[in-house]
Length: 258
Image 1: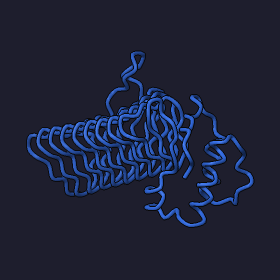
Image 2: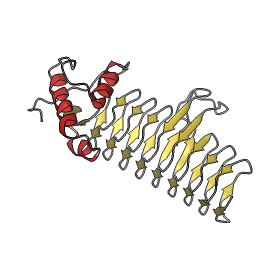
Image 3: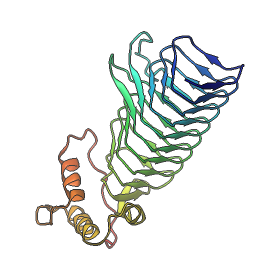
Image 4: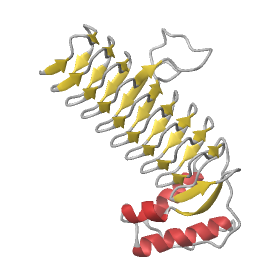
């Protein structure tokens, strides 16, 4: 195992570091932290114990992983986790907290990009290839799907769900669920249309896109989706809508659907 670390960094004796991990000046890695191969820990970054990271993650200066939940009833001796996949980028000032319940985990997938000063609270779940722009903050127990884009300064209330391939307009406040594949924004937040650019980039085009476009119109008019051809995207949408929701759904703007 080759670990490259600055002499001013603190690496606890019982931390686990994979091959080719680099640790910058004044970084702190606590006992119990598990960091996968080829990861980079920047200057002044902190990886607390109770963090399990996959390979190829990049932690920029002053980012902090696995801090105590911001829950006044939490007992620090509780053994809970922050679990992270592979190939994520955590920019300056990013924070993510471990879960509140014993044995529980806050989870972040793979291939995500978290910009400056964004935050993932305790007990959240963030999917793969999702982007948080600067100053995004999600409250506890929020679920964010795959390939989601969260614009700058978006804030999300506890227990909300944001479906895969959704895009949330910058500075939007989310206090209900965001439907997959859609663009949402405004004050109060409402669904505008499909996330056209995101769907095109994901290769959801042609007949598959047309099915989702029809689904948007039906949902807006509070009609069943059962008449539509069942694609894998529509199946995901139907399953997502059928799942339990603690917050209900944000509504739709009153404009012509795309």
